[in-house]
Length: 85
Image (tube, rainbow, N blue to C red; front, side):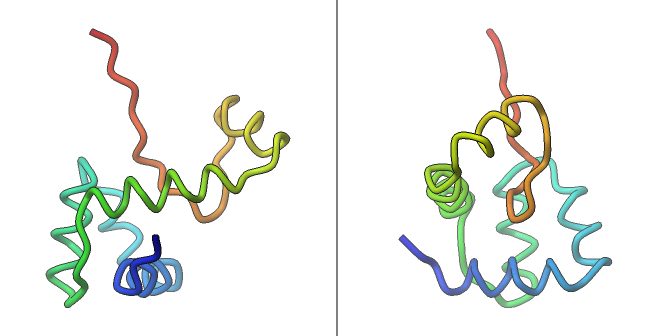
């Protein structure tokens, strides 16, 4: 499910180093959504999860192996954290 607002925000962030820096400082996906809202974009942390899940499903086996090994792939947010309880 595409969210045009989220897609626009991500394109803007990709081309704006200062926005990328602000995005990287966000502690979670809802904080990214709040940052987007402050710039006039409408999306939620859940929209970001969906976007990442859909992008992950499109990865090839080789890209999945690289991701599992910790290689960052262009276009993927680096805010996935595993919490073991």
